[in-house]
Amino acid sequence: MHRLDNRSRMSGDVHVRFCESPRGKLPRATRLILLHRDPAPLHQWRLQIEGFLREKLGLELKQPVILHPVGQGANFLGYIVRPDYLLVRQRVVGNLWEKLSSFEKQWIKGNERQGWVLTLLPEPREHLRSVLASYWGHFSHACHYRLARKVFTRFPWLSCLFELHDDRFIPLWQPKDVSSYKSQQRYFHRQFPSAEIRIQRGCQFDKVSGALVPLRRTGTRATRDFQIINPRLVVSKVIVRQQGYLPGGLRRRCVESLTIPPSSQAGVLLCGAVIS
Image (cartoon, rainbow, N blue to C red; front, side, top):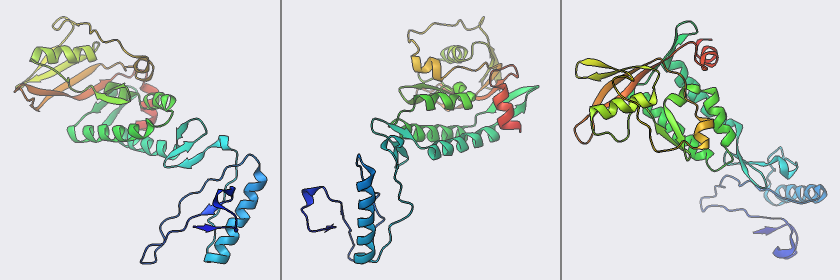
């Protein structure tokens, strides 16, 4: 511990700790944030630190040294730290935007006249799920309600694949708890009530409609977050294929493709993002 003068450590003066390993390598420097109600002492401390580094250690203080109001926040570990709350850095949000846009361009095909088809293969589907879970774990430590709305507005097709409850993405491409083929039919019909649904059974596909599978009400009420953040798109056609087996021996059936009609509210966004 090196002091900038001969006063006590408890005097309020600035102290800087330098650690050196036995091999003589300096670790990456820690960011120091100095706070004061008056900017004049901050300027004085900066001069003292620069002088100490130059005269005692032969080092230079990394530029730029930023002096701004506390209300603007400080960048730290992917967040903007403000006195009473945290925000996610725009660079982190931009990284998520790039990953979702890449998925969109690769797996959503179509045009404004005929509509769009979202293909949902197992490997990219699970990768998308892990990416969202990772970023949402980061977002959950900050104020992110508006950010969540923005994600689902910019990428409206996410509402066809996930429900967002308590900062957890619940996949919609397969039922969580089912005991029979009929219960699988009912699940997909509840998720996409206005769509033509074709479900693979063996070597053939069964067509599911409201007449064949009565729509049952569930006792779970949607939360405010779900109603605002996660509005469901209109889907005109759903293809469900068999993908292995569930623990009880029932065939696992998952959504393989979704057709979004050109009249959907996602039309303008998808046309601009995928086709252009």
